[in-house]
Length: 56
Image (tube, rainbow, N blue to C red; front, top):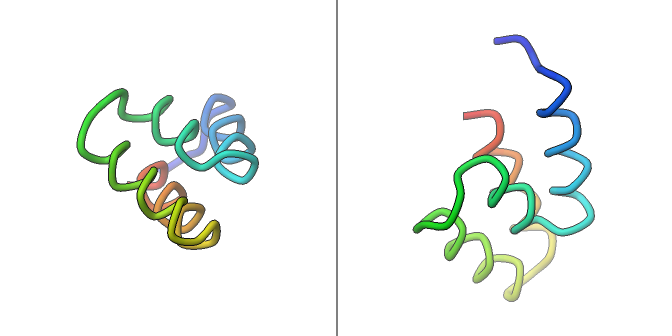
């Protein structure tokens, strides 16, 4: 799987604000809500989940 230029920007946004990276990848849905909850519980789990969603 090759990374595109938009994926690189999604990774940057995922590090700064994880729900933004998920929003850009999947839109509004269950994945976004899960990521918001993980980010509230701990910033690192939110980043890991965002990376998983972007790479999936």
